[in-house]
Image 1 (spheres, helix red, strand yellow):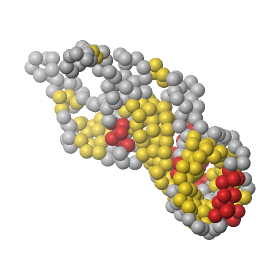
Image 2 (image 1 turned 120 degrees about the vertical axis):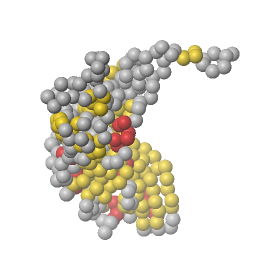
Image 3 (image 1 turned 90 degrees about the vertical axis):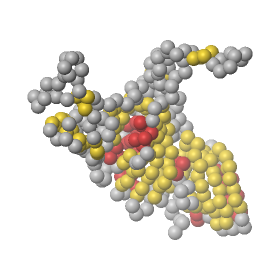
Image 4 (image 1 turned 30 degrees about the horizontal axis):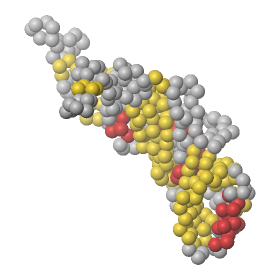
Length: 337
């Protein structure tokens, strides 16, 4: 049944013009808008940037809406004429429980046949989070503290961080270029070998899957996540696997899959900019007695470094030899050699 799924300016789009949104056609429209460009200081001698996040603001967003038409071709012409008659139009997406005020910018693709065709419309959303009143997220999925944002688990928003995200976080940022001389009449180049190595800020893509029992729950959590991401000042992303917290800010997002029926499923990617303090840290283990006194070698200066053999579980990190038990800073239990 195609009727009752999309209303434009109060009119049923299928009944009036024979148009309907195809599978996957909502994805770009549902993606979060990007943040407006953030001013920053970039000091050569320091990692990352010093970002001005006193008043972050979302940008306007242009998105593709993929639709199809059936019936007489003249009804499609009437539909396009409607969209071009003024700037903004009300899109009540009843089948997915969302509403937008959009304006037409272009029609980049059209495959036309006698009574069937496919169209891509470019529509601009100039009013991100318009008239939005914050509601704290309420999730029905199993809780996990593997990833937290400002101390709140992503599962509180009904969101799980997917495979591949940890690799993104662990990748080294690009090195800031120090003084380099490249003279045309000489081969190669001469680089300042004594310069301190520092890294640029880096963009990290978190692959997310949001689940919910109802569409109302999904949009409540989806909007709350965006609102919390763009609060003033930096966000703090805590990764339990690395036992480390990274200062960052929200940059942009994209939606790859959306299934609004039955088992509600929204798969999207968040791009976060890591501003500074993103070098990975590692624990050093040294041999100690049962009462915690470090054991030194005969010279009295050097301790004995231990290289634990680790394997991981979601909440506990185990090491093969269980002669000593430690509680880590993230609350996990660690058995030391």
